[in-house]
Image 1 (spheres, rainbow, N blue to C red):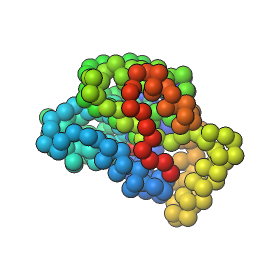
Image 2 (cartoon, helix red, strand yellow):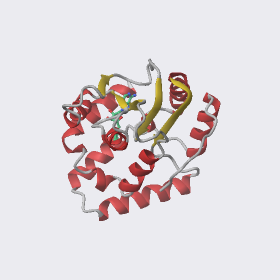
Image 3 (spheres, protein in one colour):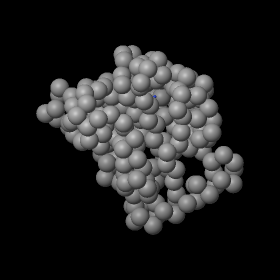
Image 4 (cartoon, protein in one colour):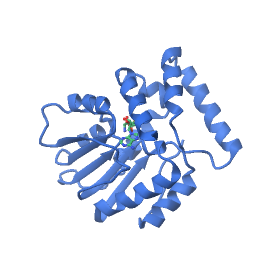
Length: 216
Ligand SMILES: C[S@@+](CC[C@H](N)C(=O)[O-])C[C@H]1O[C@@H](n2cnc3c(N)ncnc32)[C@H](O)[C@@H]1O
């Protein structure tokens, strides 16, 4: 099953995961900063956040630094990735809880904000659309969903340019052959969809103000 192989791939790569993020995501700073800055609560507000495919907790960490009263539920299918997140947030158990599960199965609870970084592209398009409906159902009327993810080019030539540019930038970053090979192995589980299709799925799910705020 697709989600089992995703779990194994991330369980296997957890040790080197945080270390080579910046090399594998050439636009790392802007990418995560844009996602975190879009959160439109007051800095002193208390609100609840669900992080889908939270991994080692990178995006939750950036948001939590801006919002010291926000509470986070981090979900991931890889218990090993979430273990790193537990270590990252050790000593802050009142603000962070952790759930090892496949988020495409179902979402429960009620949240003010749902976020996700570089995770939903592991689902086939039909399941992305189902997940967006499920995200909509756990958000309140003023809720917000921020999905920072990688997408497929709208046409084959555009997709080829995305891929070639990424390979060149990553290789120029000085990444080791082993880390690059491990990333390529993980990417076999990618099921990227186009930006247009995903904006459409969000509208169909009921989201009102749908936009792409940053693209690289
Ligand atoms: C590339 S990592 C991103 C982690 C983190 N969000 C970040 O930005 O560093 C993708 C994460 O999504 C998780 N994941 C993928 N599909 C999932 C699913 N269906 N349910 C739960 N977690 C999933 C993987 O286990 C992995 O930890």
